[in-house]
Structure formats: structure tokens, C-alpha cells
Image 1 (cartoon, rainbow, N blue to C red):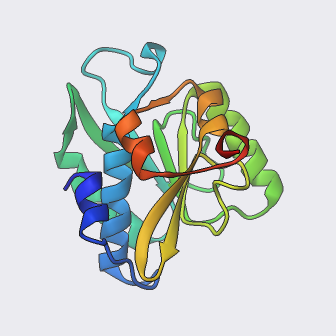
Image 2 (cartoon, rainbow, N blue to C red):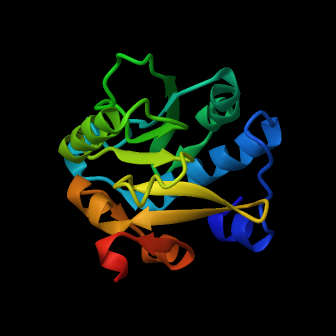
Length: 174
């Protein structure tokens, strides 16, 4: 389902322990990947996979796992689960529901900028805190915010179609 369709239908996300909410978040992550362009150096070959990584519970993993049957252009989708001590530099998109402390968020964002990794989270205030794309609840509907300044530092380019649907936060929104 296209991102605009998700938003137009008022994609409903329920509490975090709901598999339907996890599936909606997975659909958003997939669509973010479809509307992003990474620097050529991020792919070993024209048909190398787009790697979606998750650090979190089994629910998030189970929701993202079916994306391995998808393609984004010439790139197959690969989903990986990262342990807490594993670096995010092999990922194209990294999704996490939480960061243990402000320090770990800063460290993760610094790594993401260095390796052109797009960071997505449903952690409250994620995009405002410098994260790239934050999923936010809005009256039981899932919306997203983009911190364009943070995304720009990664070298990842987001489609204008995606940005038209986003709420832009951070200095670029002023």
C-alpha cells in the first residue's frame, strides 16, 4: 500500500502490543524506503539489497519480516534484527522504538550520518530530538514527522512526494 494511501485511509495504529499497529508501522517503513535515495556507495552492486533493520521486540520483527518478499526498484528487501551492541552501519533504514538514553541516540545518529542510514522511531519526540523520521500518534492515526536537517546530514535524499505528506520539524521547519 502506498504511503499516501495509508494516510488517506487514516491508517489506524493501536497500542504498541497490537500486531495490526506493528503492521502499519512496517508499511510506513517500507514506503519510506521506496521514497528514499541513498548515495551509490551504500550499495555493493546495482542489485544489492535494501537492508531494513530493527532493534526491538518480536512484534516489530514479525511485522517487518514479510517485507523480505518485496523489491524496491532493482533491490530486494532484507530485514535484520540487531542486538543492542550491533552497529547500524550495515542498515539502510534502522527502526527502533526506543533509545536507552540521550547519549545512545546521539551516538546512533552520528553513526547514521556517517554511513547514510535513515533512522525511524515511534519514540515520542524522536524527530524533534534530531531523529530522521518520527512516527507519531494523532487521534489513533499514525502520522510522521521528518527532521530534514538531520536527514540531509546522512546524504539520503527523500522524495518530494514523501515530504509533502510529512510534518517537517526542526530548524528547516521555521
